[in-house]
Image 1 (tube, rainbow, N blue to C red):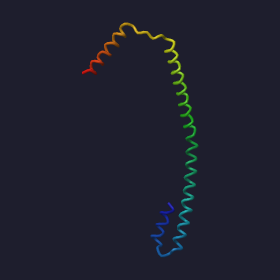
Image 2 (cartoon, one colour):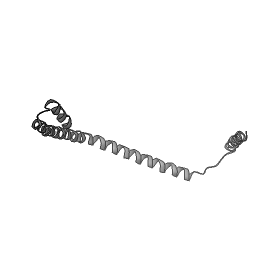
Image 3 (tube, rainbow, N blue to C red):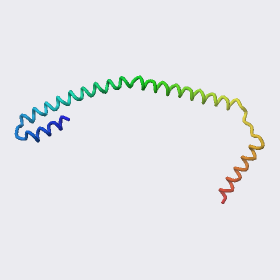
Image 4 (tube, rainbow, N blue to C red):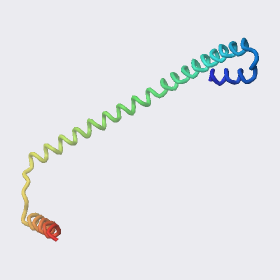
Length: 106
């Protein structure tokens, strides 16, 4: 912004070097005030967003804990149950594996 201010001053006051130097200082001052104002605005917005972001983080942590609990529960159920294949399952498995082998040989 100060560079733009200086370039405009050079275009307007081409022959007056003192005005050009003064406009550079004035442009820097304007940018300093503008950036300070934008910094304050940014800090205020972040302070308003902090509760929302913290709520989102807490909800994500709770969901992760629930998923971890569910994963542990499913693993415990799988470990305690004995897995046995009945005859129908064996028939389906052998039929599918035979079809796969036949398609590979072609």
